[in-house]
Length: 106
Image (tube, rainbow, N blue to C red; front, top):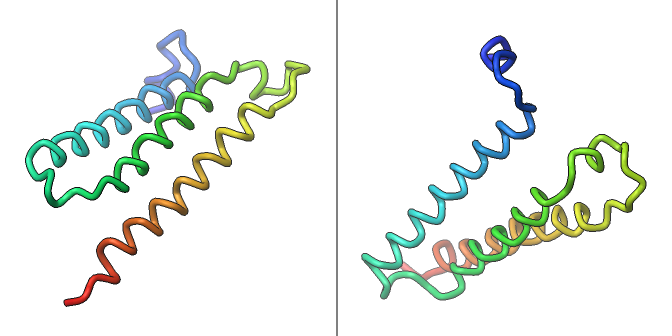
């Protein structure tokens, strides 16, 4: 795989961004199809599991390569807030989905 990537004039971070973008698009595609096919079974709280990670995804990918490498003298506040938002959404989505599916009476 590394030999294959050496033939292209791009950084590995760009390839990782493309792969995560494809996975993110796939997640949104599945979410919209579920909303279209079964709107009565989809709780409105489930949309927060998709909207806030999208905001965090754009915040993290908006950071320049120089800042990630440490060549920039700017503070890393934007990147820090993006990662904290992503972590908070991960915890919140587990809480929402656990409450929706596990704690339901049989």
